[in-house]
Structures are given as structure tokens and as C-alpha cells.
Length: 121
Image (cartoon, rainbow, N blue to C red; front, side, top):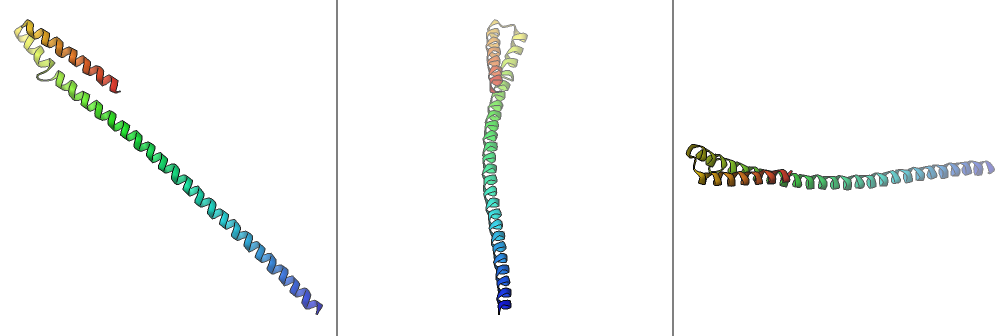
């Protein structure tokens, strides 16, 4: 009977050892899964933050471009037909002193708009 008890005792020890290692393996795998989930969530939050930053930068860039386009349109209007160049041409052709004041006014307006463009960056 002792032999049977000894053999049964060894089997019990083996079963206990297997259960221990299986529990240790399950705990290790569980910790790895939890760590992977936490890492994934952290990376996801970081990516969302980066997308928000890119969106903010894009809006700022877009607004700046819109301002530049608007000021460039004003420069074109000041310089073009019915602006400085038109009045300057009339002054050169007619030598009318009243046109000189208009040309100077148009030139100052043009300089002011160019300064505005420089400020927009």
C-alpha cells in the first residue's frame, strides 16, 4: 500500500506543479494582454492629440492664406485699371496737375496695402 500511496503522492505533486505552471502562464498572458490594451489606448490618445494639432495648424495656415489672397486682390485693384497705373498713364498723357494728386494718393494707397501684405506674413 505504501507503493501505491507513494505513486499517488508523486502524481499529486505533478498535478499541483502543472496547475501552478498553468496558472502562472495564464497570469503572464493576462498581464501581457492588459499591457497591450493599455499601450494601445495610450497610442490612440496620442494619435488623436497629434491629429488635433495638425487640424489647428491647418486652420491657422488656411486663414493666413485667405488673408494674403484678400490683400493681394486689394493690391491688384490699387495698381491695376482704374487705379494707380490708369491714373499715372492719364497724368503722363495729359500733364494735368489735378491728376498728379490722384496719382500720389493711389501710390500711397498701394504702399499701404503692400505694407499690409508684409504684416500678414
